[in-house]
Length: 203
Image 1 (cartoon, rainbow, N blue to C red):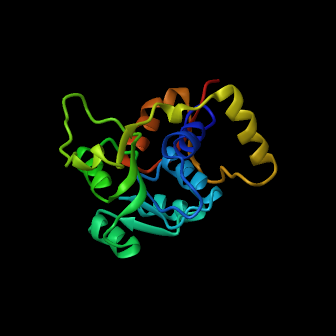
Image 2 (image 1 turned 90 degrees about the vertical axis):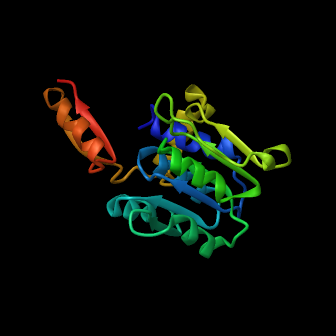
């Protein structure tokens, strides 16, 4: 978890979004990275913290990690649900973890005219997004994240200390464990959405 999901998630909050106390955030995709973005947002007292996913079991975990609202976008209009929570001005920060073009476009659209859209997920090669770019000439920000711009040698010890002090939790984040000979089963569990994070036993 420390090798990617935690450092990326917290790095998005601290370094990319620079989320402030009381700012609103929408997180598209509540997998390993998304859950840690939500947890990081809760640690800085963001409000509201909106988790969007297509799997109810991941949204349930998002609540445990600090989401104030959850939206299953497979059976509701995520954009309208978000507007009903924060108003038509949109959120201060939107983060996409999916890499799905339509989701990226929606994340940008529901970000306020002075907000930040952070892209963690990467679209498939050749896929292109279509956005209204004028707000970028003023205060709106669209940027990609490279592992949350984290510094593992400095960040990981701090996060471990928070965990040991009970201020940071990884409970239920690892949902599946496999032996190396079951690697294809692990990949299938991730692709199906059943797993949040998998552990592969190398022995």
